[in-house]
Structure formats: structure tokens, C-alpha cells
Amino acid sequence: MDSENFNANCEKILKIIASANADLIVFPEAASSGFNYPRIVEIAGINDILLSRACLMAKSVGKSVVLPLIIREGKDFVNRSHFIGATGEIIAIYDKIHLIGVLHEDRFLKAGVKTVAGQLQTEDQIVRLGLATCYDLRFPELFRHLAINEGVDIFVLPSMWPVERAEHLSILSQARAVENQTPLILCNGTGICGNINLCGTSAVYDSRGRLLARASVDSEEQLDVEIDLNDTRQWRIDFPVLSDATVNLLLPENI
Image (tube, rainbow, N blue to C red):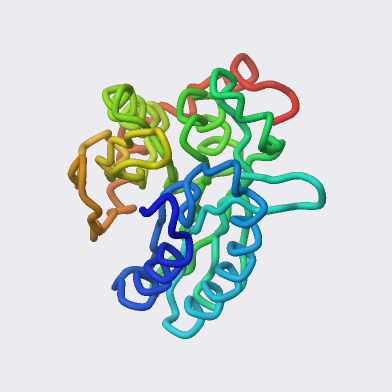
């Protein structure tokens, strides 16, 4: 990502949607811009146009997309993931719930208040996706709620995770998959974004926590990964962890 040339980032996003061969295409958090807060008004304006173009592109090629963007909503700005269906319609939107206090994200962004799941239609099945964003990964109750109460089949986690906490990203991503018996798609940014050195290492884990694919640290890559949901279903039957969970001990009332 070029943290200054937003238009170039937008064109790259559209090109990937047009050319990728997958049922679902996932982009990193704040995919067109990163967190360039001094230019947030400009970013939001560009993203309105990008979102419309992305929907049209998704429809024209018949692909579903998770596209996270900084969006303006009234007087506020939100860190929003858009789940765009293969028809070009926005199936679901998720506003990042957990903002990073030490980075004062709440000075610039409004936190989301609702968990979100949406249905992906493939050629032979309907797949429920649970959406989360970056720092949400540190809050396991969100993922447990998605797994048990929303019945999701796959977690989708766009992020902009820094190098200095790269080990946490790997550990926590695998843990969320293992403890919820749910595959996890992690799409992380790479390179320099503002003053943040991102750690890359986008990855996909299956429902047993096995690593199916991982990208490099310092270069942009596309991972083409097939997730076997029949294996997920069988693992949940063979070792039914989720049915043993005492959910009320873990979840706040407002989730």
C-alpha cells in the first residue's frame, strides 16, 4: 500500500477484484489509505467512489469481496468492512468495535456496537462469514459469540498489524481458530503505513488451527486457499467443544 497515493491504491484494489480467481476476495484493514488521519475527510470522499466502483466490479465478474475502508457517516468516521456479494450488493457492513486506546483511535473514529455475520453463496453451498477487524483479535468473546450465537463457518479478519507485535498476530489468529473450531482468514497489510511498519504474514488457518497458507513479511502477495468446510463440520462432530461452552459467563449483554 502507498500511504499517500490513495488513487493508486484504489486502482490496485479494483484490478485485484477483476483478476482474482476465488469465491471470496479479502483486503486488509483501511485498504485504500491506511490511517492517514490528517487527510481523513479526503480519504472518506475517495472511498465513497471506490466502494461504488468495487460493487460494480464485483457484479461484473461475479465475485464476493470483503473491502475495509474508512467511511464518513454524518459527522463521524468509522472503520468499516463491507461484505459485497457477487451480485454487487452490500450484504453486510461491520464497524470495528474495539478501538485501540493507546493509539487514541477514538479521537478520529467512532466504534461499532454490533457483531456482524453475512452469507456467502458459492456454487454448491452457503457459507456464513463472521467479520472482525485487527485489534478485535485480542477479544476472544467476540469470536465465541460469532461462532455460537451467529453460527459462522469462517472468521474474516482484515488488519493493519505492526511488526513489533507480529508474534501476537500469529498466536492469537491460530488461537481464535482452535478455540472456536472455525477457520480464520487473516489479511494483514505490509510495508510502511504512515509511521507504522506492518508485519504482513497474511494467513489462513483451518478449524483445527493448522496453517494452510502464509504470506511473506515485507511484500504484497495474493494467497489462493481452499477451505474444506466438510472437515470443519466433521471436527465439530468428533470433538464438540462449542456445545460444551458456557456462553453466559463470557459474553457482555450488549453483544
